[in-house]
Image: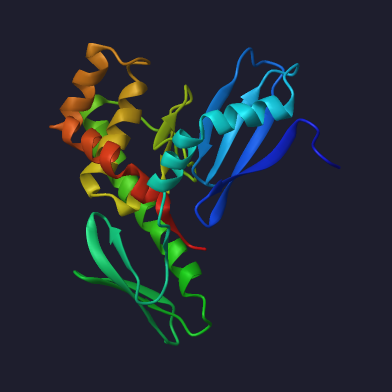
Length: 237
């Protein structure tokens, strides 16, 4: 069944087109423009009484911003044999090998993925999530000793809009793409979420807790601000 609350358009850009999704929202009181980093598309939210064509006109009027956001996500970095990525902050070459046993070996300058069923990407993806999950658990244990916070569950997020989250049940969620960032950046996000379980705000007390767990946190914030889009640009397909 066709979704009557959404309508898709295109904005021409160079030799391609950027998708624009116009969405009617009964709670919206004005136009709202965002960019979907996963789909690489502009998203315009409009009130129900506004026409789709008016929403598209609004997108066209703001096309420079949409194109700027699109360009910040280009080029995509596709996981492939012989390709280069930054993993845990270090540049490494991806090497596929044929082997009877599926395995991933992390070296100084390379990541060697062995598999005999042409499933190297799948093996690598599972390995990444397992590795960052283990690193997160270890960091949580160490930080819990400092600020006396017990975490009930640790989840990995696939979000394209936030690096971490937490809730009142003492669950935290960490974006698995932080595996491509330096380890101290991952630690900063974990510290940030755990500190929120003590201080549910961004008060001075909150930042004091974060600083206790991760010294020089502003350098980690600066890294994410400068390089965050790189983590979203890495794709498996």
